[in-house]
Image (cartoon, rainbow, N blue to C red; front, side, top):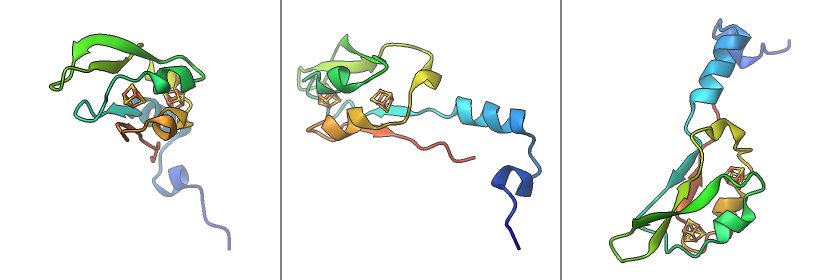
Length: 95
Ligand code: SF4
Ligand code: SF4
């Protein structure tokens, strides 16, 4: 017997599923680790990241999310992979 898709098991309709998916925060920057090297900015195919004006406690410029529209993020995690300081986390969209 086939298992039902998860949204059907939970009795959600697809628009509710999408609302949940799009509301999930995807990009998390750990300001304690970022050294402002800018590698993640170069790596992002959607150009969602930018160098901010804020400095970390150690005096490094901090990268920030350059848009409020995080739904453009592909969750490809290229930014997290190139970060030498493991300062970025990309969440998966589990509904
Ligand atoms: S996960 Fe991909 S699209 Fe999203 S911010 Fe990182 S590099 Fe950009
Ligand atoms: S690659 Fe990592 S350390 Fe470099 S700017 Fe991006 S988050 Fe900060």
